[in-house]
Length: 161
Ligand code: PNS
Image (tube, rainbow, N blue to C red; front, side, top):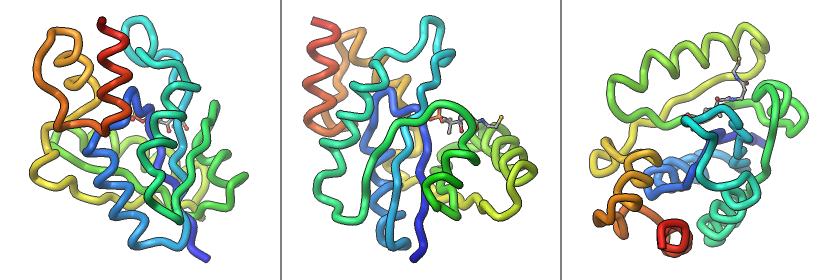
């Protein structure tokens, strides 16, 4: 059985993330969405707590029978080993993603040569979509309904009410 891990901060999960998860689920028997604690991400840490981010992912992946979600804190390679995942799948959007992702993939390979990293190109319509842009739109009252699942839309509305 081939098990893939799709890691990220998911603050919050967007339609771009879901596109990558959906396509990964078609390629692997089992997919684990790994939500990183990422306490140092952003100026004052993530907008949503780890529990909130996991719950938003859980609601968003309900339709996929071979996808599950778990939180993790610490090294991704260690978590992948504990979870019997042999492939890390990440989405690649614009060229600016590449350097950071290349560095991560190289370090993860150095730490564990049995864990492969694979990249899936983002669908063109999600090429410029990111959690931070969605947060910004929500904060400033811009339109973001089409970029996130319904549950995330409601959660963002509540945060910025
Ligand atoms: O959605 P993001 O913020 O781009 O995801 C980045 C993430 C969480 C996948 C990455 O920061 C990560 O793997 N963090 C866990 C710690 C780790 O293993 N770091 C790499 C080796 S130092």
